[in-house]
Image (cartoon, rainbow, N blue to C red; front, side):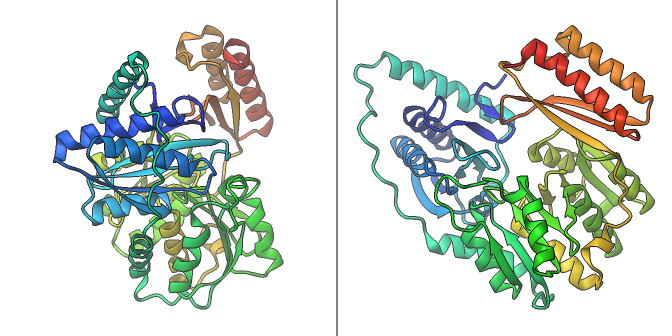
Length: 454
């Protein structure tokens, strides 16, 4: 079982294990060794978000890769899907992103993409992880450790690599004129802060930007996809057609309609699936969502003759189910949307362009396109935990979940899982009754808090 890699790479508090400088160096070195065994002398593209820790972690990873004879080309501050695109389109052996996505600025992470642009399989991550622990043991035994000299500053990011990604996004909209749209864009003070302006300007979108001046510590700070109400309020204030909001590394996007209502990933899946089916571009009339997607989405898709499969939470697992089932569209309620015909991972900028394209081509406002999505009352509660012990091995938690499922009697759902990126247990309850939903969620959270809470 992996100890470092979660559902979205290695993540933690910047400056603490495993994201201290020494371990970041070793992560780069272990990855370099893996790539060298697989492909000979490797060439790696590396990008980062806007956190103040991202630069020194990137330097440490670069030094580790160089110690394993890998050549690193920096794309500078760029979105996570931007690195995935560059890895597969420009012949790199791998792509590395230093980012903690939607987490606060104090956290950071290291994500790795293969040369195909896909995230590494679990088995490969486990093999790299085993070498990381082996190298850590060697370093601990060495006196003095060989790599404790200050890391050489990495080269500035290549503007040409960023332009390649912007041009690729622009090419997806050759026949659609977006110049009549008025859009408010929240960049979360993250990786999209510069790129979004370039992409939307290239596509002719008339945009107003929020939270686009990163200072290293304001990424995701009461803005972006975790706080979609921020862009929703500005949409109504500015009488815009819609709003779009990204997370820190812009692999997800949420929206707001002209009336200031938040449009989440479930609604985006619905409107895109219907559009693709109408154009004969949805093979098997099939969509992949996750265990967290609302029952209302499943019902709305069914009314349009579209079948929905559920995958575990994490765009990595959504993609695996898409590949297994042959689906070309999948995503998460949080705004990760995967267009398998276009990209290998969720891309917030691509999702934004797709939604704008559908709005323009249909001639209908965003609210009308998703107006029949009847959302079951849903609550998601987080409980911070000290360890991630299997929940079915904790009698009180198992009993609380069973009690909730009996009370719902088939008219709702309970999903309890651990976060793949944070020390949290997530409790999701859907029910027709708001009162029953609250009661069930609180009972399960109380059981988890008592058994595992910090």
